[in-house]
Length: 324
Length: 256
Image (cartoon, rainbow over all chains, first blue to last red; front, side, top):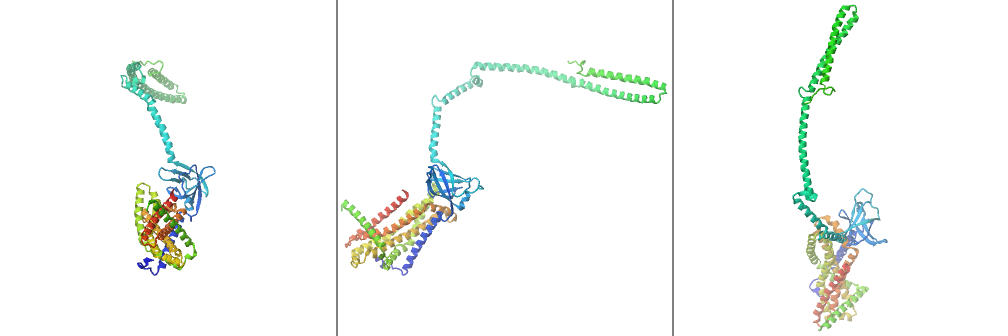
């Protein structure tokens, strides 16, 4: 080699080259092992099979995410016997706890980026997803949605065009609205607009006028009735009215009855005396005469009182209460 | 030289390179090629072709990739595509740019030296002397160089790629260890068994080509000393075209 003249070959050439080779092989081996570890070769996994109508956008090595964290990887995509796509996913055992029997799987395709497979677990207390489970995957595809959305939008726009076109229903409605607002602005305002023509509006106004007059006269009548009621009130409940007279009569009756009771007590006593001392006829006779006179007077008083009550009691048949 | 004749000569040069590659492969597979002498030649070649340039080249690859990775990740974040940035860095920088740059660097350095050396040997009649004394120049001179070149390119590629991967981690996540899980997932996505095998195979082919084409071009030289620069130039151009072609084919196989 010509170069040997310029750069001396070192003594430990063999060692250096060996070191380089060893380093290279070691780095390569470490990297290969790391890549295998990254791909989950050294990890115990369980298999989950998702069944989809369409596996478009799904690629090998794609992640299955749960709450945004990858917990599994697509290992294989195959077309099943029933013509549906089967997506085989390997889930490391340590991450399998996030998947339960009630978990739901979705396959979504956004406008930007590839498809995404996501898992949702509502109840983490549910029994764990068994190995080799087969689940349906719900599909949501933005790119599929767009044509459908555009079609819907187009029909909406057609409807709008139909409505707004000349002779369309919206035009007719607007014309009606204009007539209505014109009538609202007219002489009879909203009434004219509601009734449609002016004659009817006039009739309604006349009817309202008449009703107003009627109400005014009814007001006069009710005022008079008020007066009458006020006077009756005063007569019955006012000072010197029926109620007060009756009260007085009742008071008098009370005192008379008291007197009567006293008289009767005395009669009792006298009768006792009479019984006890029947012998003293003269004295007894004298007392009896006086007693009879007293009893008579009392009875008269009572009868007079009853008469008076009867006369004053306003609801008695022979009442003589006169209203003014 | 008219254009058709130049084109013909160009094709014939490629044909000679191809024939030489087959002959070298046959010699490499024969047991007699592995002697203490050839091993010494190979070791010297590895020493000059890889060991000497390892620190410088690794530093260069690190700086270049630092800038490229920084730009890629900043742009990806700007576009809201940060989750794809690391994958892009792995696919573009680690798997394509670094091996290609390594091969080009070794080609510029060792390839140029090899083609000149072989051309001078051809001119001075050294190879004819070897043949006259029944020593196969393939076994004695060529196969060790090819093997050494393959080892050199492979070693440089592996070491610089590893450094670039570490830099990619540091640029993306900083010194925090919490990016490791995501980093590992991205590695898993990019470096499947096929991709890894392809990556290593490409490195090996780059290394072989870096020696085969220059030697074949050196053999084009004649006793005339004017033929040496022509042989060197033709060899280097063909080497560059071959490297670019291999890179293109590798990309096409992977992504088309």
